[in-house]
Each structure stands twice: as C-alpha cells, then as structure tokens.
Figure 1 (cartoon, rainbow, N blue to C red):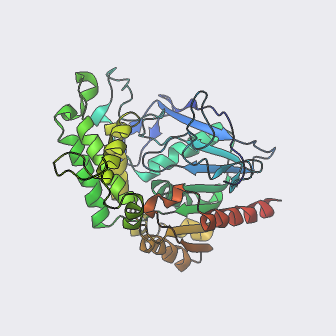
Figure 2: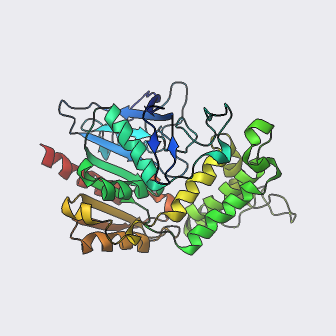
Figure 3: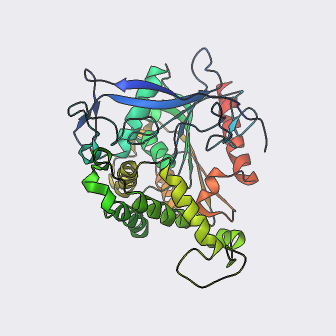
Length: 377
C-alpha cells in the first residue's frame, strides 16, 4: 500500500441545525436538532482552499481513515486517504462525515424526537439526496470552508457528489464520482425493495417501534445485508474466493450452511447487526430509489454556467451500478459542455472495487487531484 496511515483519529459530533434554525428539507418538513458526526485529516491552509469532502456509501460512516484508539481496524477508505496516498493528507484537509439518517453519530430515525422523548422511528421524515447535501454544507460552514477543492464519493456517495455539483457548483472545484448512478434501474430498485421487506416483515420490526418495545428485526436486517452483499461482488470474485468449496472440508447435503459461500454470507449478515440500524437501512435505500436529477431538464443549468471538473470512474465487473450508469452521467455532463474525464477500470471485484486498492484506479485519482493541486498553486 502506498503512503502511510494517519494513525489515531477521533470522531467529533457537532450540532449544525437547531430549533431556531432548523433543517428545511426537500419534502417541506423541518428537522431540528441535527447533529453530525465527522472526522478531519490534515491541516486546513490559511485561505481554506485545500479542503476535500468525502461522501460515504450506504453503510459507511465518518471514520474513513486512520484508527480509533484501541481499535485495530482502519477506516473504510484508509487505502485512499492519508500521507502519500491518492487523497494525500500532506496536501489536502479532508472532511468525512456520517450521512443524515445514518446511525453512526448523525441524526437519524433512531435519534430521539424532542417532541415525544422517544426515537423518531417511522415518524422521521423521508429523505432526499438534496437533504444530505444541505447537512454537508452546514458542516462545511461550521468548519469555515466556503468551497472545496474536490468532493469525492463512491456509490451512494457519488450520488451525493453529483447532487451537490448540480445544486451548488460554486462550492467545489472538482467532483470525483466512482461506481455511482444518476438513476437506478428497475433491477436495482427491486434489490432494495426485497431488502426493506425482509426487515419490515420480520416480527421483531414491531411497526418500526422495536427500539421502545424491546424487539429487533435482526433476522430481516441480516438477510437484507446478505442479499445486498451478493450484488456488491462479481461472479468472478465469488468464484475466485469460494467456488463450490465446502465449509467443513467436504459437502454433506443438508439445509444448513454447507458451502463456504453460505458461511461467508452468514458472517456478513451477523457482523452487520452490530454496526447498522434497520431504520437507517430503510431510509437510505429509499433515497437512492427516487434519485433522478436529470429528469429535471434545467437541473444542469447552474453547473453549465459555473462548470466543475468531473472525474467519473466505473469498474468493468460492477453489475450493481454498471459502466452504463456512469456513461449516462457522462453523457449529460458532456452534453452541457461540463469538463469531464471518464475511465472504466478493470477489476474482478465488482461494485466493491471502489473501496479497494487497485493500481489503475488509485493512479487515476492521484493524477486528477495532482492537477487540482497544481491549479491551486
């Protein structure tokens, strides 16, 4: 791995909207207070021009790089962020936050509703991609940053980057979008629908009030994660990792866990229970279903008038958000003469490739940000 780890980092929480200044959401609802969990890496320069914002994917959080005290697991994008790494913290001041509606320190459906003193549950307002962006912008203001040299994200994170660039292009110089989509296909919506139904049909869901009733839709959430995880890897990756190998040395036909791939999925589902909230899974996946910014024929007008430089990256074995999803974004951008670089990267690992250390991918990101640094200098 190139570069060095950041070492020990700390997650902070700040209130960015309160009762006197609530978040006004795309749906018309208001929300307050809104707290945000975030981490920063590197140093902000004197004129605050070297900032980079990281937008995370569906199940990510603010802990993108480095290590928490006493934890041996690095942040989810540690191979990308750090001294000498593609997003070089010797050069850039990096901000990573947990998304609105998440369950890792930022206000979400399991947070306490000040009107009732109990968790919001399904009374939490439905979210829009623009609501995520408004919370990111509010955090930036709290940190004294008016514009970012770059905003970066993969998958759902890339959708946030696109929304931000379309809505407020003056607030970023470059936008980096990896393995993302501007409009989910019916198949993608179907995958998410089944995951949500697994959660909501679990008897422990208790009409969304499981937090106050002492139940948990853990079976549904683990099945949702297992199914989603299948879509994050390619067939080639599954074959290389598992093939048809037996979990216990040799196959012994039964309805339990007999194949190694079954054991792997079971592990992924169980592990997920300790770090993610079923309500957040419902809310965040639903935002992705409705995201379709280019349905508005004027959505790109502000960006065309104040262009941001884009890097759009896809991976050739990603069948969840295939290269065609990225090409659709590129066609809209180039059609409005927005400067856009596009690259399809070879990787056997499917959708999860954007999280991995792949030489061509990292070299592409490094070169794109090197050009940004040269322009600043």
